[in-house]
Image (cartoon, rainbow, N blue to C red; front, side, top):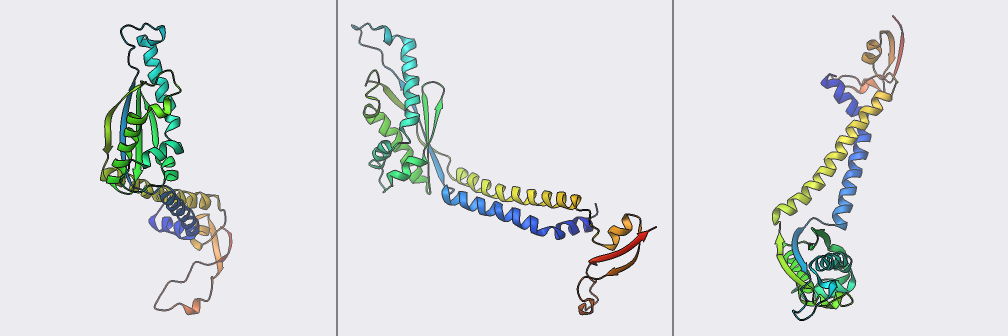
Amino acid sequence: MELRAFWAVLSRWRWVIFVVTGAAIVASGALAIISPPGYKARTTLSFTAPPPPPNVTLPGFDEQNRYLFAEQAVDDFTKIIPTRKFADGVSKRLTFQADPERLERIWIVKKQAHHLLSIEASAPTEDKAIQMAKAAGAEIAQNGSAYYKDLNTPDLSVAVLDDGVTEGLSGRLLDILFIVARVVAGLIVGIGLAFLLNYMDDRIRGVDEAEALGLRVIGAIPHGNTSRQSNGAKPRLPDKITAVGS
């Protein structure tokens, strides 16, 4: 396809491109409002169940069961962290004011290996993201018994491995690139849809298209008033064509 024909297709179906690209922009804007691009910080915790005292022998505290207990605690905290009680505890540890209701929704909690828990927090500034991640880790490490006291033992040991590790500006740029990628994807989809509709459209829209089909054009009714054309401008493509077979 020549460049002129390529441009003619885009011009003819430009409304499709505008609609699809516009929808991608609106969707990206809505996602940015719901979850605005920002900085992220991560805290990683390691859970272990300490062995019983030397003078106590309990079958449930052998090494294998202690591993299972720690793994169960990690599973429990993946459900505890996105709760209001945990958000209230974290908000009290922050140096800035944070809405506990919003804190319930910002965490990205992942179980890693069997005894590791990763907590990721997002915030508009790097300092706030780090504080929130550190506060979440400190709440579990220092006040964990308030959440898992109903488990088999309140003596579960928690070690903070990564305390408020942040991706810095690279993480924020990655979020912005995702927004740009959505818009570009919308533009590509719009162009592809335009060519698909053009392929499915069997109407003849110009003299060149009629002649390309082997028809001899004997007349054409121009679109609009050609007398208004000035400065040697080329007339617009005809709207109606009369042709006969060659």
